[in-house]
Length: 241
Ligand SMILES: C[S@@+](CC[C@H](N)C(=O)[O-])C[C@H]1O[C@@H](n2cnc3c(N)ncnc32)[C@H](O)[C@@H]1O
Image (cartoon, rainbow, N blue to C red; front, side):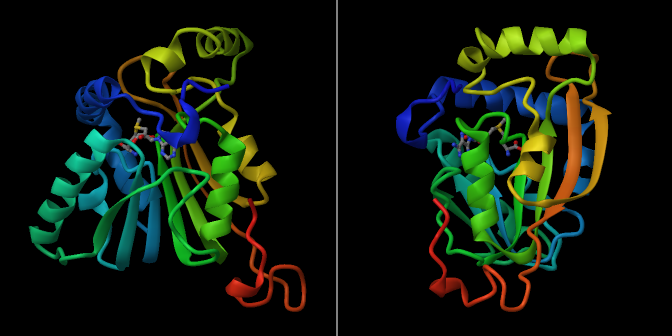
């Protein structure tokens, strides 16, 4: 279930502003190193799904040649464009390396098998349909390409899961722009056909809450088997929809 509205335009400008206030607070309390760990090993062409106000932009390593930063909410997109310009002017930055574009998971503005990596940072909790989002990430990744995620997820304990389910079925998505506290994101990544890599579980700084259970992980779109399904040129394949 979603707190979104049809067409992928999930975010209300008010929520965008609340987010703009909350995320820096989380970063200040200690999420920043996790953001750096998320992006540190990336190279080549990267698509960031739900880039928000662009707070990851300054952390993309020089080996990343291009970032397609997809954001569905207008106010966040505006802020992200400012950040893209700032990061181009920073030492080591390059004009045009980060392009902020309108789009949403399920209709990502990238060709099939065109990206080396997809980044989802605190976004898979908010997409209206997790499976659709992951299928689209899989579609745009080249075989062998990697999904990098930093997300808050379902708690390990039964008691906290009950709380998460209750919140997700009632107020939380409405108050937090479609966000869900307790999604089984890691399971969904596996079910979407990715080969899971290392997944680290941690608590967000600032105490134990229904939204504090986080994972940092990678998953690979399996390389195409020669002669097998999906091994032909990208433009010969029907797109997964
Ligand atoms: C909590 S914010 C995280 C923003 C940013 N990734 C960060 O790390 O600060 C959640 C993001 O998910 C985005 N989002 C919500 N629904 C989406 C969808 N259907 N497709 C893509 N992004 C979506 C929101 O617009 C927002 O930017």
